[in-house]
Length: 117
Image 1: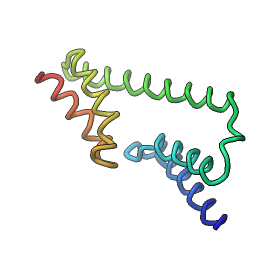
Image 2: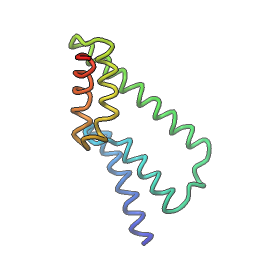
Image 3: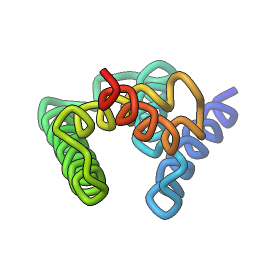
Image 4: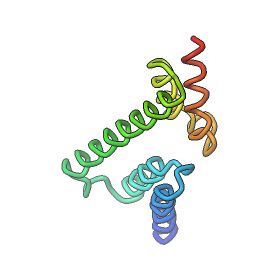
């Protein structure tokens, strides 16, 4: 059973790193899933305050990068501030509503709905 756990955890991390090359894969979710599964199968004890601080900083940087990328893309095509926020929300919600494809469609739907509203 131990081998199966390690295979699942390793696959989660591999998919997370593949997502760095192919942005259609939500890599942050896979890396978080690998950390979560390791903690559930084994123990959260090895993860100290430094680890969680670095993880929180990475998440903040990720959200900032997503916001900046959305801002540049929406502004380039004439969108407003509402469109920027809509695309950011769509980027965050899209993968949960429509797995894998939602990361591409979510920002467009979010920006479109925000501009209409």
